[in-house]
View (cartoon, rainbow, N blue to C red):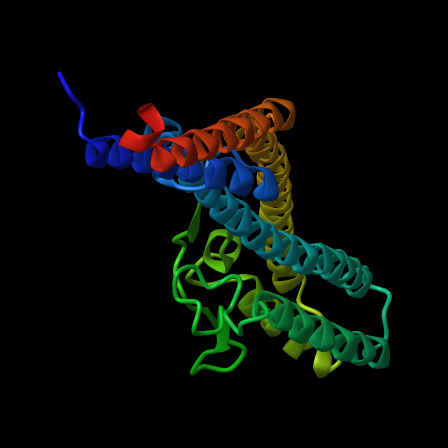
Length: 298
């Protein structure tokens, strides 16, 4: 069967076009250092890379959430450590005032320091984070944890005992707060008991029953604060370990991604030379065929 000259030329042009396309592809691969420059290069591998990128973005978000959670936990622990020191000093002063040997002036002086310590305690429980949210008010983070009540020497614990959670992994949530309600209680509390005792001292007298109640209240809140500090430390320890695991997962995904997309430069250079040689031969062949006519064959 005869093949017309036009058909030969068309076939040669298609061959040249294909060779040029492959040549451009390998040159782009070499210039970028990547085997995959578009989805059509390898649809299956491209889908795997897209899945890996999506997982990497998810892990990056978890890492960001972890850092936010660690900051909140560390801030709470720092304030509660100060609260512990304050409570210990309050306990020492209550015992000091209640030993039965203090003069009225001594008691008045103690009342002044205790009043300052009580106010410090309120400030510590009403601590805020960098965004202005109250740390110890539960999910009511827009209101202080402790406010003065309507009656003399009365203090009220606001907010609730609910916890705030942060997503730090697939199906993994971490509680990022502890609450004043859990440590002090929502009814009669340490500050109310303590304020009544301070009022007695301010007039130069001491009430042993009030002192005992104050000591019991201080011991109770001290115990709860200690538990909270331990809890906060445990959560931070978990987050540190979890963060390390995520970092290792990201490194593994980076390695897999590199293996899928990276270019074997030696193999690519060999292909480049092959395409160049083939293209040169195709051009020469096309030229010779184009120059052929009946007179050349006579």
